[in-house]
Image 1: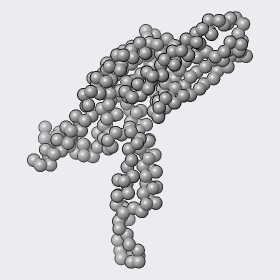
Image 2: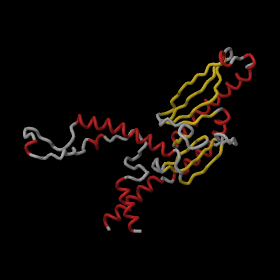
Image 3: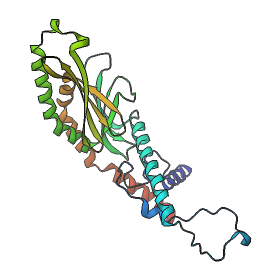
Image 4: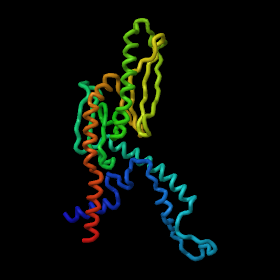
Amino acid sequence: MQEAINSFVERSKLRSSPLYMDTPNCCNSSVNNNSLICCMPRQNSGDSSAGNQNMDSVDDGYSTIAECASIAECASIDDHAKEVEVYEKSLNENLIDCVYYKLSNSSHHAKYVEIGYSTYLNLAPVLRIGAGNYERGKVMVMKLEEWNELRRWYSYLEVQFSRSLEIESQINWSDINEEEDIIEDQQYESLSTNLGIYYNWELIKGYGSILKTVSIETYNYCSCTFDACGIEELFDLKDIISYRLEFLESYQLESFFEQFVQHVVNYRRFR
């Protein structure tokens, strides 16, 4: 038991667990680490002989502003790559306290919704939507704020699908040449920094545009595609999904875990 506690404390100090607690929020790109980087000591080259040192220059052992800027730029790229990697891992992890809803009875690429805590996203409550297996491009993860953005957008989408159905009911498909009279078009709309929508249209000559499907995409390029029936089925659960996400968030599990780790570290330090 003691060995297990020691191991847990060391992993917590090194932040090597899959909780990625190196920053207050690993998926918040607004966290600025420049002030920390500029206080980092230089790495010694290992050559400390007096003959190789210039006595006219003074080296305080810390990085210059130019060096800091270069380090910060590299760190920003690394941080983004880490965020994408974390989101990718959250696509197929086992969510904590998870509830599952199946959106269709189709055996081929059946849609599903899962709501639970993600260990890779700092124990944040997440909504995971997918089709078929847990494959990149067929499953996506979003947090409560992104789901709320999606809810606000739904009324506009509902109108677009309704208009498309009206146009489609007026088309005499026997007069339509698929190769000459139908043009496929795709448009993108950004709902937030982390969420966007691709509208997949078909332009029917002499009739207008029909919205066939929409692809909801998160900033790490993971997406899920819905037709009119699929998106309606998803938003039939909107109140349940919102309640569940808000309910899980109310427990503040991330804060509880951080406090627990700190208590264990303090216990080991002052024992």
